[in-house]
Amino acid sequence: MTATSERTATAPFGDLAAGLRGDVIRPGDPGYDEARAVYNAMIDKHPAAIARCRDAADVISCVRFARQHDVEIAVRGGGHNAGGLAVWDGALVIDLSLLRSTTVDPQNHTVRVDPGCTWADVDHATVAFGMATPSGFLGSTGVAGLTLGGGIGYLSRRFGLTVDNLIAADVVLADGTFVQATEQSQSDLLWALRGGGGNFGIVTSFTFRTHDIGENGMVIAGPVLYDIADTPEVIRWYRELLPSLPEELSGWIALLTIPPAPPFPEELWGRKACGIVWCYTGRHDQADQVLEPVKTFGSPLVVGLHPMPFSVLQTVFDALYPAGMQWYWKADFFNEISDAAIEVHVKYGARLPTGHSTMHMYPIDGATSRVPEGATSFAYRDGGWAGVIVGVDPDPANAGPISQWARDYWQELHPTSAGGAYVNFMMDEGQDRVRASYRGNYDRLAQIKHRYDPDNAFHINQNIKPASA
Ligand SMILES: Cc1cc2nc3c(=O)[nH]c(=O)nc-3n(C[C@H](O)[C@H](O)[C@H](O)COP(=O)(O)OP(=O)(O)OC[C@H]3O[C@@H](n4cnc5c(N)ncnc54)[C@H](O)[C@@H]3O)c2cc1C
Image (tube, rainbow, N blue to C red; front, side, top):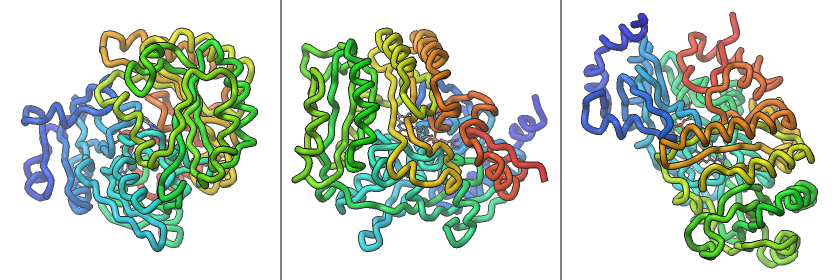
């Protein structure tokens, strides 16, 4: 037993529970197994305790308790993280998942968001006002982790990353004090939170800029799918076309298996495909003209573009990917999709190991790449794509094959990449990969880490080590 785990074993968790509005769940308590479960069922961690916080005061108490008793701290927002970094063996999990309120300010185009919200909560709140803040491609993902790592989604071409729209954050620091980070106050902390992950403190409130989208929040969106044999032509066409499209139109490309469910025609269920999921957020009277090239290219199996509220688009894939499946992730940034890369995609697209396994490439361009690399801690701004290969399956018996497929695919594709990866798509890949992902921003992040968390109390994340004094 290490000194830390000995101290954890004797830490007075009952005293912590007595001071909280929320509950403390310990091994053996009813609900412990549900409380320690995260989205990725490959993660099986046994924390010392899970504190389900009810407010910022609970978070402060948890941090002070953990520091006083030398207990490791894990922080849970939406619990979606690829590597399961919301839970940890022997740690106190500071669980924010009960904190889910939002407040929209339609006059000032902002939304204030609690740290346990999912993006479905936020889209529900803002789309009612015809607005949205850039997020991702799924409703069930947590706001906290996605934001702190960057936030790449349908609206990034037009309005930047989620972090580019983060204007204030309330933060509980490693010593248990509370600050508000804005451009005017603790601006170095805000800079670090814009991509630096959970390294600097626990965010208890996020304030985002919102934007008018579509017509009263209605966008025109959906997948266009092609036979997997068309992959080389489709990728070549897509990589040339995308830069020429207006920023109101974005689309991510995927290799996938057509889900065995409506609205897909039954004769296509289970067929491997190459597809692009498009989202047009501009004026509807211009939609036909803008969407014409994406509807007419090649011989699509499915053209599924329809008007829908942005909040519906964001949740359309949630049912396909419920919590509790096995996930193995490998990722990279790409400045270009080279012909050599296309050959690798063709090879591994034909070998998709399960119906849920997939490869996605999300555009990093437009408004995202106009933000200078040093303006936020998110470093990969020079154009291209964030790519991710995910082996996914409900059956734990398939954990081995899906992981092997993802590793082999990544191994062959990686030489065509830009070097680092989006930290929110990484599992545990070690310090060199974290450094590579922050590039020239790493040293400044390490200095800010030293200022706000010199003991590295917040280290269960894609960790940035504090610079030495
Ligand atoms: C199915 C799926 C789809 C995804 N799609 C996208 C996408 O479209 N775009 C995109 O950008 N990303 C996407 N992601 C990646 C996603 O951004 C990360 O998984 C992210 O970590 C999820 O955030 P969370 O709050 O749910 O995670 P959690 O697992 O709760 O936390 C992730 C990390 O953030 C820390 N953390 C959580 N809350 C706080 C807080 N309040 N303060 C400080 N630190 C905190 C945790 O300690 C942990 O290190 C997707 C992930 C999944 C599983």
